[in-house]
Structure formats: structure tokens, C-alpha cells
Image (tube, rainbow, N blue to C red; front, side):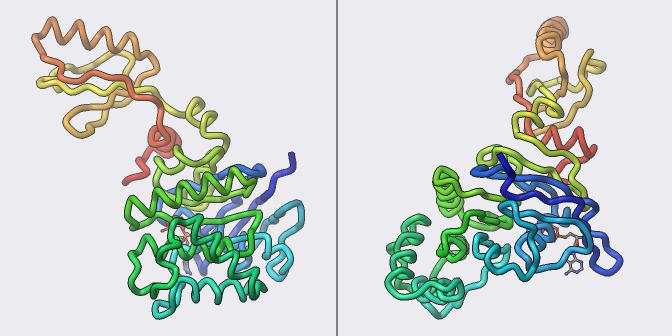
Length: 306
Ligand SMILES: Nc1ncnc2c1ncn2[C@@H]1O[C@H](COP(=O)(O)OP(=O)(O)OP(=O)(O)O)[C@@H](O)[C@H]1O
């Protein structure tokens, strides 16, 4: 199947800062594609170029098989974009805000009112539609922003870090809404620096760091290609166990340690035997499945949380 979005060798400078260096990726129809990277990696820049807000210095973009130009209005109407910063009129009600955004997309009258009802229901805020946005929590405002991007029923929804700084309830609503949209066939591009969000939502992803895509593929592929299996151990006196065979990396986590290894069974058996021989009490010993954290670490040598 033709990709919904294909981005090829995108480059962007801000003055002397090179924000994007040959960014290339493609997004399959009806999937949720994660753009994962730390602050300053180039996620927002990529999204702004995709939506036509910023020009690229070089590279090509095809959206729905059509070359995307900044002034291509018919194409832009197929895209819903939720920027990182909330853009709402605080004094207006949620419905009046949505009226304003709907009219920008060329919707009017009964059709617009119906769409407003539907999107408010989809984001779980029907009961607050007639209240001023200034009375809403940050998470509720973010949900209204998402609703605004959905009024014109885009085929492609682009969300730039939609869960930063919001409450867990709004985050759950956003997750549910993304899953429902995907089930309706909408293609989603979702940027985040939270790995657990990519693991929960995305089919495919590109890991972006310092303006470059350093890996991309399905979540399953990346985990099996780069993810490390590991063991978590909590034991008083564990530090006295040096030189555990087949362990490639040790890091502390909470009360215990994460030992990365490709030979889980051998390391488990070594730990049990040595602890018993040295009289060390093991409080917790469990295997840890490969995570995007370990993918990022093995690709960049640093943690995404640094
Ligand atoms: N308007 C601008 N002027 C100058 N430099 C910019 C501008 N916008 C972004 N940059 C720089 O470009 C690089 C990429 O920034 P971008 O905002 O795309 O990253 P990001 O991955 O979205 O990060 P964040 O999660 O912090 O939003 C960074 O080095 C940033 O400082």
C-alpha cells in the first residue's frame, strides 16, 4: 500500500543551527506513527514543515501521493494539526472556539454544529461545551485544541507532544480518541519524548536525535533489533558481586539494578548460585522485557531521560 506520508531528505537550518539533517521516513495508511526524540531533536520542525507552516531548505514531501507544497490548500484541508502550544480564545466557550476554527476550515451552519457536537463527544467534553475555556484545566484545553483539528474530518492528524503537562484523565481521553480515530482509518503522526506513549499507541516509529532519524521501523522490529533483554535485581550486598558473566551494562534503578544481557537464563542462574554461596539475600529478581529505553540507549549511548 502507498504510504500516506513520505518524507525524503528533509533539511532545515535556523541561522547556523541545523535542525534537520536529511530526515527521511514514511507513514503507512491507517497507522499511528511515532516521532520519538529528546527535546530539541527536530520533531516540531518536522511537523511544521509537514503542515506547511515552515518551508524546508531541501527535501521532498508527498502526502496522500501528492507532492506537498506550502500553498497547496486542497492538500492542507486533508490534514489536522495540533500544535504544542494551545491556541484558544480564553473568554469564549468551547463551542464558540470550535465555531471559529470550523469556519476557518469552511464549515458553516447545521453541518458545523453537528461536527462540534461529534468532536466534543469524541474528546469527552460534551458536558462543558457552553463554558468559557478560561475555566478549563490545561488538559481540557488541549483536548479542545485536538477537537478543533478534527472538525473538518482530516485523513491525516498530526499531534505535536499532545500530552506534555496534562492530567492523567485528559491523557487517557487523548489515547482513547487516537485509538478510535485509527479504527476509523485516520492516519496519525504523533510526536513525543515519552517512550511509554509510543509503546502504548504507535505501530511504527522513527527515532530522531539531533536532527537525524537514527532508526525507524515497527515497534516490534526495533525492539527485537536493538532492544536489550535485562534482569532486575534487588539485593542487599549486590554491589559485592563484581564481574557477572554475560552482562553488558549495569545501571541502578529504584532500590535495585538493571543488568543487560542476551543470556538471561545463565545470568539468573549465576546470580542465584553466587548469592546463595555468599549468603546474600535477594529481595527481587525478575526479567525485564526489551524497551524503547534500551533501544535508544544502544543507538545513542545516552538515555532519553538525560
Ligand atoms: N525558531 C527557531 N529559531 C532558532 N532555532 C530554533 C527555532 N526553532 C527550533 N530551533 C532549534 O532547532 C532544533 C530543533 O528544534 P525542534 O523544536 O524542532 O525540536 P523538538 O524535537 O520539537 O524539541 P521539543 O520537544 O523541545 O519541542 C533545536 O536545536 C532548537 O533549538
